[in-house]
Length: 426
Image (cartoon, rainbow, N blue to C red):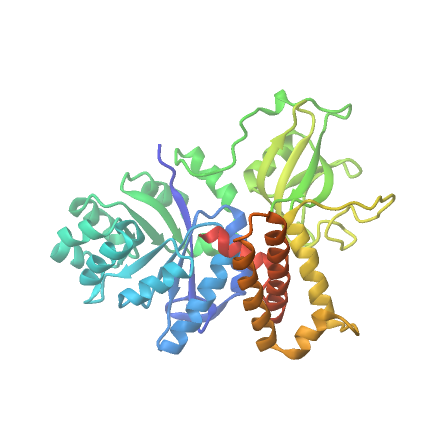
């Protein structure tokens, strides 16, 4: 059975998230909303650009680009799309696809041109009525791969007109009504204000729908709790790791109920040995741990949880509970990204706290033109070194380029995380 998607929606006005097309009230910090959608179990995000001017359109595009760097779930851009250039900009901003507006006169021709240039799989069309399908059914089916229904009253009509699949955006939540819609073969997903509410437990909602026969992408353990080897207290130790940085955050324990609750909520839930009760990490502090993966070790007696950590993992306010160093022997890390981050941090510190005689501060003092000149020179040196059969010279020149490039990054406030996210999108 094909999985049904739960879809969040975000409306942008002047680069900010608002509550709807006709509701300009602020919906909250779009960055926080994006992170919640990404971690809570939402499958897709539809973003509607409500801009009225070219300047506002560019502002919203910038927000979409920044947002796409924060999330891993697919983003689809909608709203002000009247030409191929608009589609290109949304795709380059990180959108998986674009949602054209069926009420615009240029949509049919735009869909044909865009399908030839970007591919049919990049194109969806939103519909509040079936007029476009009556008038241009052949063209729509040829150039668009999916529809987005904005008016659930047209679902039955669309079923009778076309074989194109579609998602449906609805207001509020009624379990029986949602199940009725999602059980239709032509419906691939459902969304709206309920899914977009950051307080909605998406993973728990998926469990509810699963009980009604609706298959969604939810957490399911490949092993039963009875297969684990528990400690003398009947508990399973859990090591918790940040899924992005691999930093070990904390260690706790689970019983069967907390394990099942973790799967149900998508948030790490433990058993407190001192209080003799379950506790959802972050329930009082807001520092939730959203589950990314759970892995059992070879002896089946210890769980490794990779999580998206909100705020600090430790009750002391430290990022990790493991911050009190007892013994340390000097060593050289072999983690490339960590080395880049450490050098970047040194360069960043030089800019914030200049040091007399520092070459890095010399570059910052001379300004952007000097930095760019050095980047260009080092790039040329690499080209020359590459003609040499010995690799030592090219290693040296590449290191020089990377250093000067990081000076440029600090100057322009670009981080390694920005670069990694950009590469991931590609």
